Length: 269
Image 1 (cartoon, rainbow, N blue to C red):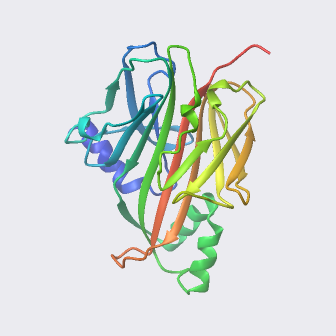
Image 2 (image 1 turned 120 degrees about the horizontal axis):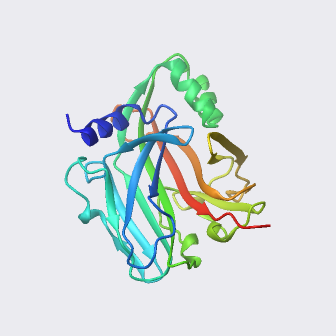
């Protein structure tokens, strides 16, 4: 079996079990016209396996710059045999890449589903299942991923970092995270269907050597949260939201997983 097909299949069957799914370039600060390999990863603790990058899993891949929006989905391969997508940028500045996946389904045992809901801060769903007498029933879920990554091309950044892409679940930085200094606060807004999402658990991840750091906050009534980032490096922001399904196609819940990756340079104090 082809390696990338296998890893793609692994993602389809296991990614909803409290696994993060993220997108990163091989370098966050390429030169103008310098090639960048964009990859997808699935795993835990900000460490994972590569996922095949192709149209079978991608509903939409879009690129945002000062020149506007470009739809990249047609350029993706027809299969999951490819592990990365090569990009190059003709102009300096912030580049935002946004991916939305196709919906996939999974069924988890009641205990596993409850543990996953608790880990992702979805106590509201636990309460809903209890109120409807479903606590002992398996969790039947349809899930989608909504991920973004930011690049700084040619040593320049701009306001593209805060563009709203219209993802169903979207993490929007309120200030350019590429310009933060260690000790500054990362402020984000979380939107669901374009509306600020209150009470969502926001996780902010960083690997410093072999040490994993996960900072947790909740969004306020305006859908905003703020997290102090103590040092530079590659950071990941994640959030999960779940709602009851309404189309009666065999699943009880629709979950949406939002993710944002960026690099905050380490600057001398």
